[in-house]
Image 1 (cartoon, rainbow, N blue to C red):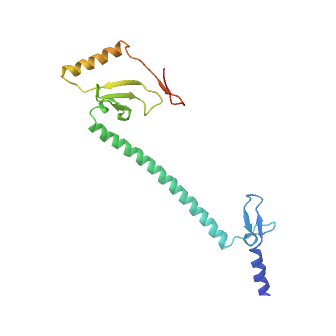
Image 2 (cartoon, rainbow, N blue to C red):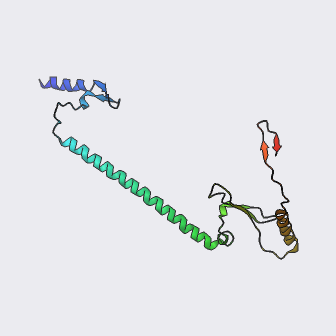
Image 3 (tube, rainbow, N blue to C red):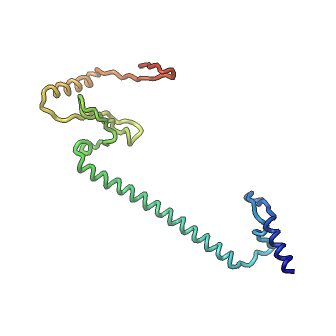
Length: 169
């Protein structure tokens, strides 16, 4: 008799079905078959319940950890920016983002496209150059300033076509 029961349960491990709810495969031996009443909870059900609670707590802790990391990262960036502002004597006093600056060095030191890395549009273009007493450099600075004030500059767009040719608009 006991040999037949062992064979019966052994056969149930070889019989598979597909769940109509989730479309996953299952073994007949893994099924819980019950009738009109819900079955009485056993130790395995209690273990599953505790496992689910533990998983939920773990997820909440992970979410809280991520939230703390985001706050710490933002605070770190803020503190780093404060430190950079103490060191930066060029951009910080003018409330310019150094990431918006392009180093030219000659004839001027920097061209800053204000807002390029923090906003969708560029607010203005700032040309920064060191203060100098050299007459030749002062002359270049003045000539750049005059050209801008007189609208004596061109805007050209260079397009490279698929065939490799260049078109200037």
